[in-house]
Image (cartoon, rainbow over the protein chains, first blue to last red):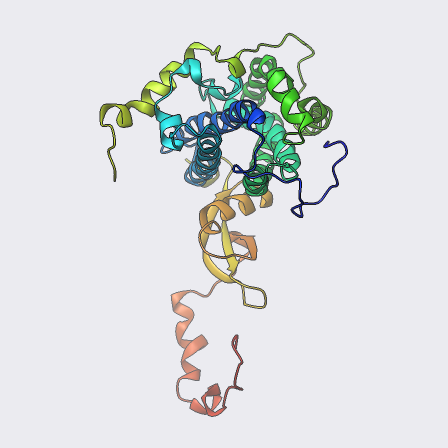
Length: 274
Length: 99
């Protein structure tokens, strides 16, 4: 996916750190790190809403583990974003002191958690994308991002395995679980296109070898998702109408409510520590 | 309500964790799951995420045959008065860790 770059991850002379980063790449890289960090943060928050509400104890713990993985990724990615921005902000500032219009997550991660079928279907669709993305990002010419990606890739692979196995069991389970899983896939489908869009930010970073081309991820993503969905005896929607907007701050009504809850404490009690 | 119904088709599985290569798998507890793959994943999430784990085993709890308290006399008493059966008369070779 990185044209003209050797595969493998030994550091080379062309690798960049925050200090050696081409200043012209900074705005695009900051924007991109916000996208990655916000995806992880918002999805992590949605998953954390299952804490104490899981269908049974073991799955409650599993969902909370996924949430913690995501929030951990967000911490690293937003911390790096703040470093690249160089404006004296840190990961907490970016997570807790931005409003919905400044968030750059894809719409799919901000949708309410829904029933268990919806949460599983979203996790499958997103993790199938995230594991391909982080696999490729391990080769990023921006060294600190490649480092975060190496860890995130392992986590995303487990998220994909867990959500795949659940979707198969829900789809091929009872009439009700099957119907709920299919409804979830139908409802989520129009939010998947946004993950593979290529705009100016991505064109800049792809050309510089910092990010993989999202369009190159779509075919392997679809192949993976189709394999799981067909094993689950479910069907992927044919509809190709896709919603978009999250990457430029145009969000659904749900993100504001999520942020109100997530950001309440640090905003009500600035600089609170525990 | 029958046992099967109250667990929603899920049965208990016993979980064994191997902390390092070559060490024995040790019983750590149990999880509920519908089948082996989900039992492995639940075991990973409940028991495998803190501390080092190199391998996990799960087995349906129903596959384990256990002694009852009534068995304790005939099964275990005879060993008590035969100290020569205990391996305490041997020196463990230096460096033997998993004996």
